[in-house]
Length: 508
Image (cartoon, rainbow, N blue to C red):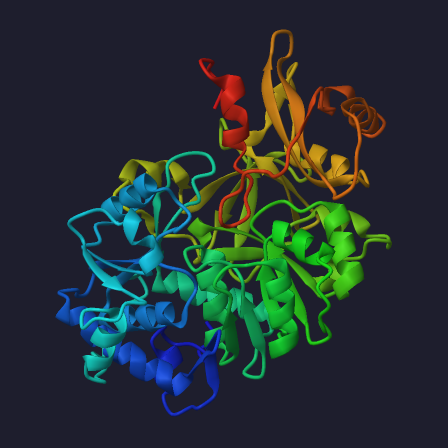
């Protein structure tokens, strides 16, 4: 571990408590490293006054804001665990997550209070009374509890995106975070003079983890309360942003956004969390330059641990095939591909389930020993993703549960989506499998067209048949205004599949 920049999470602010360098920009509010250390001391004391101690959970239900990082470091200084909750969930889902986490206290923005179940202690982030977050924090003494969490202690409890089932509480330890900081900073080269845009929500590891890499390096992080393409471009130009992390849907939206902006300061854009089409990636490189680095990881791995370097993005060169790769494993990360039924390791180039062994892999799922045991095999994490290894590069085809079996043939939706996305009229596409009397399943396409474009179903099917094997080609096209996604940009294919499989049993 590179202890030059990191020895423990709390040392990120403790070591800079005399620094006036800007740590966080949140709209008009700026917080230096010195002020972040002081405010996190006060928050730690505030938590103690609310009855929260080491090992206790405290919920956070709010947008990206400087106060979240005051809470994160304050909780770390006394050993409490922050559970950041997706504010885009329904009230019923929020209640489930908070109930499952065991948090007795919730710190929330006022706009989300309707989703907090009765019986919990609430502290309002943007409240005005004596019991509001600003009042309680500012009244607390500037006194560091001097807690020093151990590597195996839980740092953060995040809930899996739930794209294939009920969300599970992922236990991310301080040791996981340390390994993540090592791996990430070895790739993105953030430095004290860097300015990092945090566009993903902090309830997602891509938001919190990316922000922590910036803070660990002594950089300035710029927070977006909620991502919009025009807003992201304005912040890049206004703050001379050098680094950011975008999910593929953000890459696509920002690339086609006509907001005038000076993007010459950008040095690196990391992308990941969902498949990206060649078309989107090539258009992005044409607009922003060869500044893109691919990233693959899960909430269960504390974020990315496989990276596709900028120099491997060569759309017109002899290695253009690498655009379909997730990249190479990071420091201290091992990969293997196995038969998902037998767990027997498969040779290079053969598709199977991707397994990961790394110090970034979670401690387990909160309160779910059975789910933890089934996801871990001799320290290897079963990702549920299908892919293969070639020459040291990982290729991720799709989620195991999204794979379509048509007439005994495996169809990987991401492969079909990549082909359909190359049609000039297509803005976004999702491929799912629906029941078929003869073949078991057949692929169909959900398509969002670019503004002003019109095309028929028959034209799309013909386009696919020219480029795909017959069993892979969509047999129907559904035109829609938008695709269902969660806050991390992942397609919610279960929502697209549900009407077709109602009353039927799918293999997974």
